Structure formats: C-alpha cells, structure tokens
Image 1: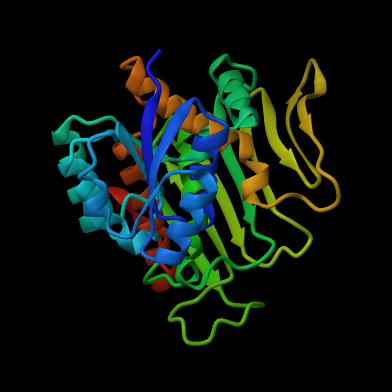
Image 2: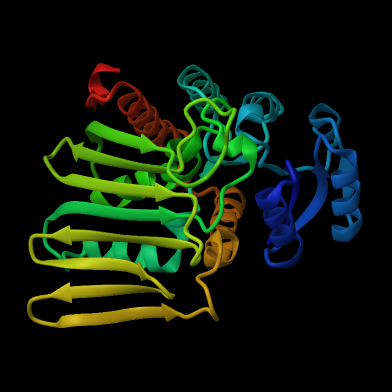
Length: 343
C-alpha cells in the first residue's frame, strides 16, 4: 500500500496535534510543516523530523507532497485553501472553510470544480460514541428522531482571535459549528430556521465587539424536528460536551459529566450503557476527549485518497453548517428568528 506524503500548514494547538498524529499515529509520512511564526515552524520541524516553511507557496513547490492539511486561523483559510486547490493537491481543512459566507461559497465552488479530494475537519462525526449513536439511529433503535440537544462548554476561553466574532466567529462559529454539523449528521435533515441569544456574563474580554461567553440556539428542521444548543467558555469543572437524540421510541444520550459513553433509553430495554471512557479527575479538554476522533478522521481522509473512496464530509457539509452559524449570529444580534431559505 502507498504511504502518503503529507504537509501541515498552521501549527497552533490543533495544527500541532495533526502534525504529531501524522508523524506518530497514522500510516503516512510528514514531509513538511508551515507556520508564519518561524520559531514555531522550526521547533516543530526539528521535533517531528521534517522540513520547515513560513511561506505556503514555497512549500507547495515541493514535488514530494501528496496531500495537505490546513489548520491556520480561520481568517487565514481563504489564501491557504485557494493555494492548495490551485496546486491540485488533496486537502484536509479544519473547520470552518472560511470566515464569511462569500468566501465559503467561493472556496466551495473552486474545490468542487477542481475535482480534488477534500475533507472538512468535523472530527466529531468520527468519534466512536457518535458513530455508534448514528448507526443506532439509522437502524431504528429510537424510532423517528424528533429532538436534538447539545451542550458544548469549554473549561476556559479559546485564543483571543477565536473569541472575536470578526476573526474566529466567536461561540457560534468556533465552537457550535461542530454541534450544528452533528445535528445534521444525526437528524438527516436541513435547518429551516434558528433563534439565538448571546450574553457576556463571566469572562472579561473588553475591546472585542459583540463578545459573548454564553450563547443559546433554538433550531427547527425542515421536517419539523427541533434542536437546542448551549455553548459556554467558562466551565471550570472541565470540558463538558454532551448531546442527545430523542425519538418517538426512545432516547440516545452521548457523553456524561465524567466519562464518554453512548446510552440507549428504550421502553423495552430500559437504560443500556454501550461504551465508556472514564478520565481521571476533570473531564479532558477537546484534544484529549477527541484524541481518537482526530486520528480516525485523518485515517479516513488518507484512505479515501489511496483507495479512491468517496469522502463523506465535504465542502457542502462545511457550507451548510456555516450557514446555520451565520444565521444564529444574525438572530442573536437582531433578536429575531432567521429563516435559512431566505438567506
């Protein structure tokens, strides 16, 4: 089997995770890394034994790169993604595709027209608990899905750029984008309308326009099903990510306060716990909680290239989740429901 030669662009907290996984946990070769901070690029390249770059265009001149992973800050995605697409290399890109609707549409268009293999980084689809739940929903364990509920609570605020709605999108884009995609993944339907609220109640981030440390979103799907979301960035007790899918014949609960698990609630079987991982002390942060998911999503991307398989989470999924996030942000700003078909 061919071993893919890969490059990682952007070496922040998650970019480093992907570079490390490619080097140590995935059957692929890490050829080069790139970051605008030369010290970061050189330090990472020395640790992971690969070439270092600060200029993406210089990196893409190499002839020994088979695929690229883009993990730059959201506001820098457009240039990075466009450059990789122009080089006609398979591309894995962390969410979101871009930081505004216009650039999302442009990038989705050029990606589709290029014909390259493209995967967006919705890692939660690859988390074993979530894949188990999705399979059970498809197999009818809870009947018709009528309600999705999700909590995403960070133990501390993200980097400043991610807090800023004008740069990283704030909680609606930086965090809840994963939950919006997971809702589509589980419910197999598209959003019709959203109503959102935002507040700054605990965290001090003076100087950031429309900064919010807590947000809620109510969503209605086209088939009539409902969803509710809460995101926060001050859950000091740990990383608290839970969701549930309530159906006509039962309920699936994914995650709990001190462990990861999938729990089936049904009239005939009562309560059945299907998988469990219990960390020591506080719930782990996202890089630990989804450690396996990050590896599995990259393995899926590599497998799609080597064996020419269809990628199941692509630019269309990126665009649809982003549309929900933008509608939620608009709703919170204006205090009114926003209908997606009219956007």
